[in-house]
Image (tube, rainbow, N blue to C red; front, side, top):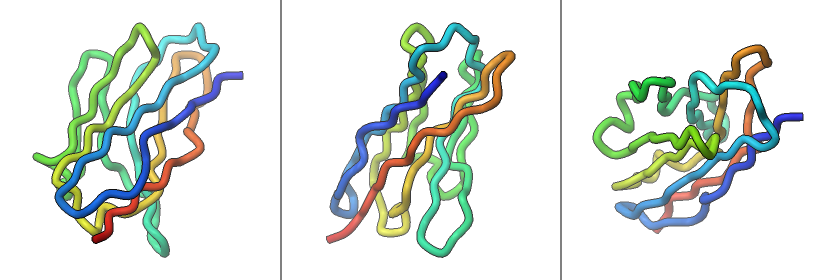
Length: 116
């Protein structure tokens, strides 16, 4: 059973930084697209950033220039470096991975709270 394990969330002041990590365990399947999504209270889950196998990336307009997504294929891990955090970045962040020959998987979610 492939599982995604997230880490790195927490409480940070506006303007601060956090780095999220998400690792896929026990997989022999190739991982295609990796991404981060977030869901704030009372809102729908939204795309934050995705990175494809070749390294191409796509970001939500709200995080462009502040967040950086990266991946380490050898470790089946995706990262999200979040800089210049704003109050409106507060949400539960979920990682997502798309595999070859396997249904997509979601992480358990990690809380990011931006507050002064």
